[in-house]
Image 1 (cartoon, helix red, strand yellow):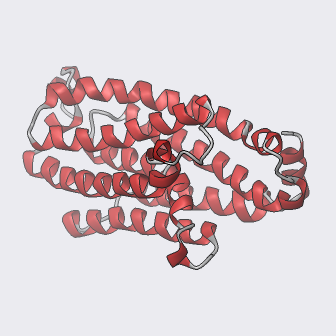
Image 2 (tube, helix red, strand yellow):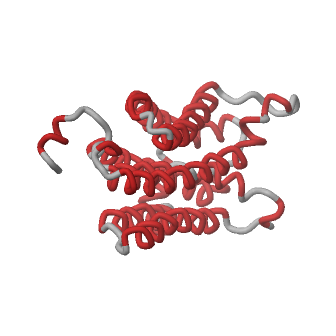
Length: 258
């Protein structure tokens, strides 16, 4: 990167060619739109439309806040792509710093929600011990999601002036935290009670592969960082769900949470 570019306090999209930025932006717009749709579909009944169902219990404040901040993240990602499309770089930069704050709040909120997941189930009268393996998978999957979100979000911030890195890392960070919406989506009758973790892994893999295929078709190569990120995202989840959660150490840790 040229020295004069490093001195400019602008974003990645002003340091790359217009065509490169536009290609990357098409990717960001497409995937961010899909993820936002998945969030609305997954949380439609249990969150967005919950106030319309008087028979449903009111959400705890912490859960409501967590759902709201996640929604802001995905809406913000969509708005960022639109701002780049209309070349509103100043607004994009300002919203970017706001999303950076949202990302930090998501991290803290996710940790709090995960740590209180099992105590909350116990308080509601659920027999946690009888479904310990099931709940262990959920908790360890959440820890994996939090870990990968931190990695991708940090890289995206550090490379915010390089669109080729910044955009894929923002996408991977968003993919990392979308499974709660997917998990509820798989509860629809049309999925016939299939394993939600398997379905989520397939969906996450497809979202990641879209990024890989896009890079290959537009640049005739795939960045090593993109491949590493794909393996990290899926690998963390597979290890957390299928190796750590049923292990003695994994179960012991889960029991220590309640």
